Image (tube, rainbow, N blue to C red):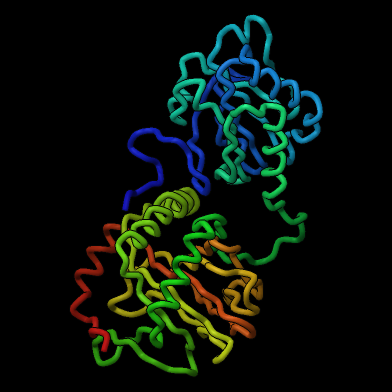
Length: 366
């Protein structure tokens, strides 16, 4: 696993990934794009405002779609590589809400792997500057911003400000797995079936798996298909690892286990309060990930961090809750339906050395 989600060479952004940060000439000599986080951001690679479709999009931007961009909830950035756009004033800043990146040296375009007119597109980014939609330029410029506006409307808004309460240091990251991948993982569980899942305890100097229906009721299956494992790894690497690096300045390089877990209403599936790194052979674990596969198809099953209050965490379909393995947490009982989740642990090279050193304490699973 790469240490960050940024590829060695620039490539086109994909939905769910963080958009590359850059600094370029805009309303100031050097404008830092990452400072626009906290609102919905639209980044449109126009090429040149002298092109007919770009001109139509700009006309709609300053016309019927002008009210979308106020620098509070949303901002729009046009990227032009044509010096004539500035000389002829074919495109200009319109504050609040609309700005232009003068990308005459094409540094920004290269960062986003946009190399010519055929690759022009518009990105819709959420408040974390993660890609939620890619709208290509096509033969329908009159509807281009309609499609952008529809994508913007799908981005969840923040809750109104309130009196500060204790908050678990957990990340909720949407759009890690696509719905088709979620379904594929659930199909794998249905095909293979699940085995009763235990938890780790140190017993007489050994780390062993303990089965106890009083503490945990869950069934797991291991993902063994190499292509499916690779798909999961790629999305964790590109969509979760950069978020951990940005939020916690920790660089994940390793992943432990590829399992699909099922909490079933038939036995009120749950996992009581626990931490994930308290035994000799699990101390290397740094972050736990709960990637929900079918949110909305069951009731109950929320994550709770009791050290930080009673707030319950639920990720959307394909979304993840990511948190330190040191945090006390529990999965509340599923009261209706079945909850499916993909549950990896993440760590780094130092953790890998620690895992190797403590492997002798791990009792093989029976």
